[in-house]
Image 1: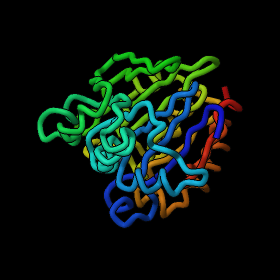
Image 2: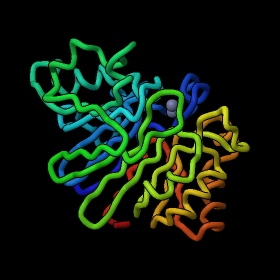
Image 3: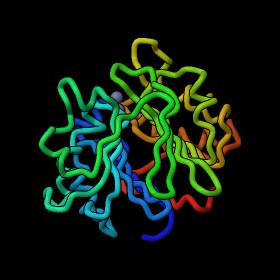
Length: 258
Ligand SMILES: [Zn+2]
Ligand SMILES: [Zn+2]
């Protein structure tokens, strides 16, 4: 595949959907400006890469990013590091992760870190580059562990990933973009004790950010039961923004939108 694209190797969110594999949980492969980046390799990431058509080759990865240390985002990080580095025989690639994914009870095994060309710690307000690709982690999310979303800057536009978080207004300012990808776990009223976005939160984010395209993903049971594609169609009507519910294996060619 050529050009700039995002491939969804999993659209599952939260424990039940992941444990039962009602949707796959492999995370997202991002190709921008000739760089290949794996965001959040959850359970099944390696298998989903190799079984994708066309196949996605882990030895072509330039970086792996963990938004946070939760299992549905990081379970396959170690096997992906091995695959990226051909079992450690070819030092390659950068890992970006919050400090708490690397220090106490680390989700990234220490012996594998030497296989990488570097490990960079994500922090609030941080900016990072990978060749011509620049991205930032503008604000720490409200989630039980240290969590960041991403805003990529490429010539012609921005692509924002709002990963797991409880809603707060500053998200709107920090994730302004032409393409917005949102982890919408719940179709239920907002609950300050459940640190996830709801469908109502997604509507507020889409209205506030007004992207050219919004993609909903990371669905929990309440979203799946309500048919995410129907919910996306309704959000499109309500906001006037193009809204898509991600499907497992979906490829988004982003040059059409920025
Ligand atoms: Zn999650
Ligand atoms: Zn989480």
